[in-house]
Length: 382
Length: 89
Image: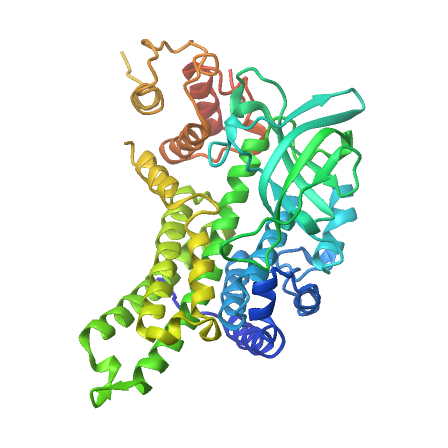
């Protein structure tokens, strides 16, 4: 028997996070977006609220929640908080925490999990390279084993939290030859490491409060005990990470979608033209209907994805289906919302144009929609 | 003679799905799949999903070694051992 209800705890958490987000996180969003400013003060408030420690085991100072509950919390955060860049930065932090939790040594967990969960440290994952996006095995950043330490050389691009990161999870190739799993390994690199250069924050179309940059490694020296997981297991770590990331990103897209839907419903019920509410026009009502359909179907998919991960199962196909459906649904909802609001929707003070700009990135990061379709088709044997 | 349908299915999956379109000649059960570049990152994930679904096993991090995934023969040996609770031959 299936139960589609959230627990009382999850519902309470939803309410308190929405209330917190609306009260504490929305004051400067438009200005911060225009200036590309990361709101560190809001980051700290989110940390105090426990949002960075949701997935951290209690023994390391976290809440030790399962992924389903955390996904509900991220949905609530994204519904209440209008700063999608901040939410993205929080999800990046959570993904790094998950990798440490799953693959970190006792010493690594002891050193970093508490500080990451309290927001004292900011983390980034660096995988993407100029010529290696979803095709991880073609990455060129390489690692040389010097006996007692490792040396990293190469470059990464578009790294979320890059300019702010105190700790960077870096994926690099051990050798040029063919090997099972691409012979990729994973390392924890602290900011300030000799040989690591962090580029300037990149100017973007949307998600402007999120800070992204290039990273350059010029024989950056990393101690042997800073390898995360087993030697050569980077690709498997990446595959696990991307499933968690797609669950959390999908949760945030659904929260935004719900906010945009409610704003649109409210507008079409009050805006009158030709003597009637514009929502009475079928062409407008149809857009609202589609938004609601995508929201409800997306939630079912999200909870299935999160549940699978909580069972310790793989969710390769489900994560791709969910991420594709919901990110495309969000982009379409934001575009329709701007259209429904007419001239007002096009103005910055309505905030929907920012949601639209932010939503476009959702169909690009964590694997483009085209890659998701390829993965789905490939799993089906095409 | 007993025909091992699981081995046949695994061989077909690797030849017809993972190796398809890669201009690789007819693979034997002992051919080195890594050298032949049969598996890209998605291919490896698909293979793991295939093994878990068809052999009703769970592939753990410890199983993900070159030795276990060198050839159709070693992959089958790993899956069989996971089913019976032994170690790969």
